[in-house]
Image 1 (cartoon, helix red, strand yellow):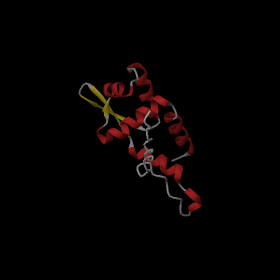
Image 2 (cartoon, one colour; image 1 turned 180 degrees about the vertical axis):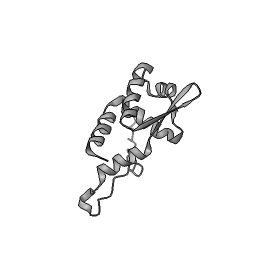
Image 3 (cartoon, one colour; image 1 turned 90 degrees about the horizontal axis):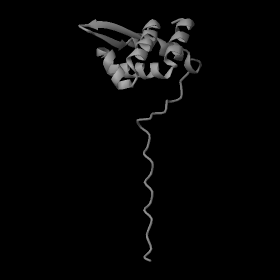
Image 4 (tube, helix red, strand yellow; image 1 turned 135 degrees about the horizontal axis):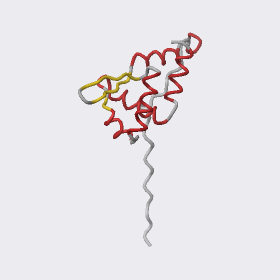
Length: 120
């Protein structure tokens, strides 16, 4: 990936609505999602949604296909992987990187001790 392509992709997902759309489509997997479903799930009105989808398709992070009357949008996982590779190549100077913190493994907050009530 070239630096200009990375800048365009990062600028595209650096906007709140487009990041929401992209994450929804990543979660949907390779089947993608119809524009109407995206509008419902994201809360973005269809007129604004089409603008944001056009931008994400333009930079190559999304693809689209026609299925009957519907346009199905899908995340282009290879483009996402290329961007992540570009961002992390030569990470830590080629040495072993520190482990990434895991949200899934985070410990729950300790329960607070129950306060004893004194009789009045």
